[in-house]
Length: 329
Image (tube, rainbow, N blue to C red; front, side, top):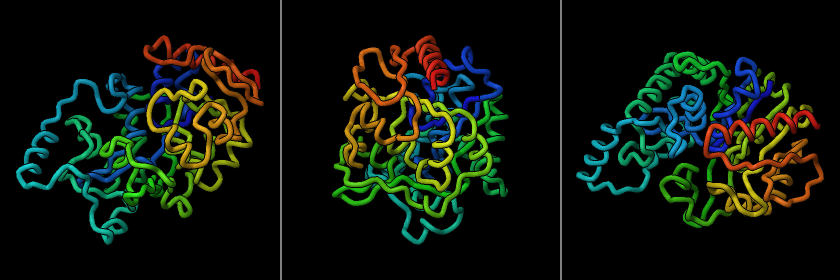
């Protein structure tokens, strides 16, 4: 124990310091796959990869995504060729008919690599190529992730939330767009009217995920809407979380978010953009870890510490607070 829910950059930061607190051989990480995209035929799984890279000490801890000291020769050459063709910088979705054809996992989120609007490093690309090849050989995403974790020498278990396609789609006045287009290509600027987890009604958590959710659960400082929302949209996950012990680290200090588009997305979904709003969005959480500067009064047990994570020591401090929170529930 415990099981850690991973999405965005907050949980990889927390996982940086968990080893002195939790035995890594007993930790399972369930990663959000709503942010995944197929780009130029390769399946990119940002939240899975952040865990793989972070736990193998390859993560770029300046950006908190991608591999540190990675080159980007292919990405640069693609950009030059795309510019020569005058295709512009906007992401290009494949035709509607292609969105539901071929590999099921890529449904609703297939993009052309011209332009390659995500910055894919060369070593990072090798991971996407291997993952996609394993899928094409007939492996599930769970099995492919297990093999990648073995290749990276991980001691924790890493699970995708589902082997079925779920795509986070942001609705804006300019139209529907995948979360990666909204956040990476558009800088999170479009007004948001709604967030949809397309495919979730037909998707299921794997048995391995449900088994992991029977253990105590820790949620890092994650965006409740797009980092956790795709998992919560899966049948059986909310019920499982309601039946186990759950501790969450707030991604806010009162109404100030640490990073990312959580505030805008929470308001779009009808929640206050604050620690109190996070508590309302996550009613199954039994105890919270809040920053010492956060004066929010919640109706659940609260442990306070400095929740800002910039160093490994910071991460360990917050991990110790999550353990203390688990013990008071």
